[in-house]
Image (cartoon, rainbow, N blue to C red):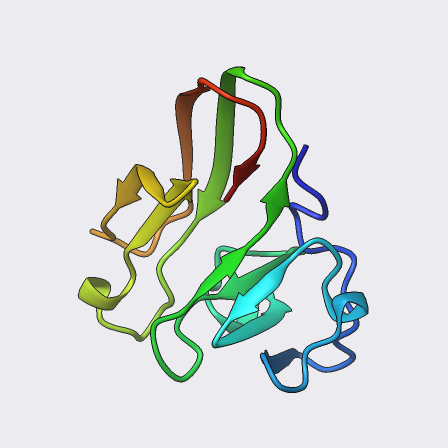
Amino acid sequence: MIVNGGFENQACQGSYCIWNQNNFQASFLPGWLPNTEIEVGGGTVYNSKLVNTKVIELDANANTCIKQKLSLKAGTYNLNFDWAAREGASLSSNGIQATINGQAIKSVTASDYNVHTESVQFTLNSDNASA
């Protein structure tokens, strides 16, 4: 369902790249859309525990979000994602909220710099969703 969920398909050639709505092209990070800006980079740039992975920084220059348009049928789904707070940044600025059709389905608040896996089940009562 989710395209490029591990951010492995991306155009960044450096340790990290920041794109905003004015210079972003769909080929830079297929499947994802920035809301204000999007920063992608090697995991260890942000947290030493994120080895051999690409990640999204949701607070590049200000709190931001990323979006993906999904075409889902009515039914029950599971959303799983890994996250970690950025080392050296205040834990209070490292919260995450997952939404479907504008409604929060999962909110997390950082209490440490470890890698966490979150799972949430949600139900759609009609076809199509935006996440």
